[in-house]
Length: 137
Image (cartoon, rainbow, N blue to C red; front, top):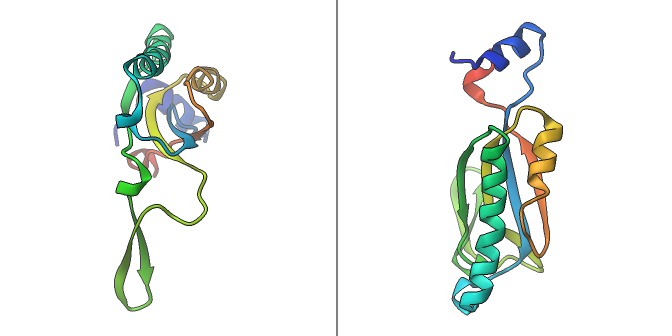
């Protein structure tokens, strides 16, 4: 197993708290092709500000991307004893969908929350600490 020094210290204390977080961006379904250049640039400026704040805090963006519209998504449902069921989106009465995500590091849960609050959205965000499986005994 590979541990950072902070993770090693947490393990010694019996604490497997994460220093990695995933932030899901939930908002009304979007279509990037319908955005004006000004709307696109304003949104990207907000995301660059979040990314800059993460780096300024001494942390890292591990991954990030916007997702294509929900009409391009596929729902996969396991079936008892059979092949999985594949269904094209959109899904039911969903008003808000995951439109993007970030994976980033933070020294503390409080720092992760403060950084996550900087992400621009027309909906809300969900912040999850990551259970890094290769660090679990």
